[in-house]
Length: 187
Image (cartoon, rainbow, N blue to C red; front, side, top):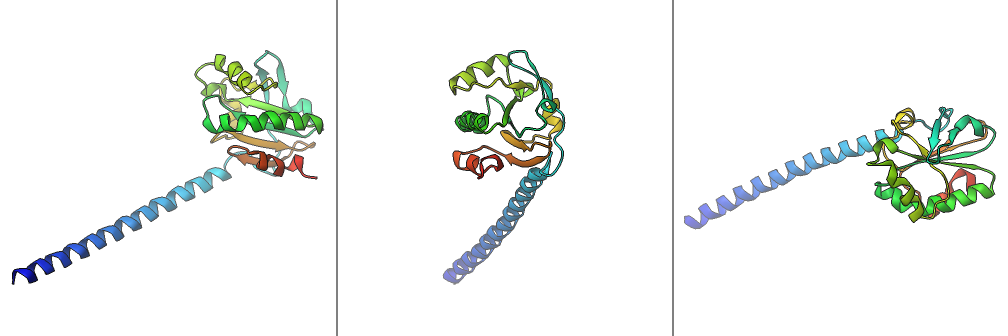
């Protein structure tokens, strides 16, 4: 009799356990689906391919004022970054190489530092020197351009054609392979 009670108990326990696991699985699947939908929605936000690039006028680290309108008639690549951003750090060697290649192709490279997100503006120059970057970044001191371009995550890279239209947007870090797939590097 005791053996039958133990078997009944274990069966009941196993059924409850399996029901609990099934419930947890369905909940985790629901959470997973919600995360997937949120990521998908965030990728669709911001200034997108096919839209006209919005005006940018910022001061560089060296104090020069640069306007995106100054480059109308030339292809432009804008890269949004911050020094503390790990993907930006991983991407910086690619960015340094890309800037050199863009100059060779007659295109313009603009790096926009999300200065409003930095601890200190003083960290930018040593960061760039570490990667041997020669470009003078534009400083988004108040986050205006970050909001205007709806930059959700950094790094983000936007490619603008000669007519001022956005032809490509990359949310996330660039690799050397991905850089070669960009519109401006295709033959």
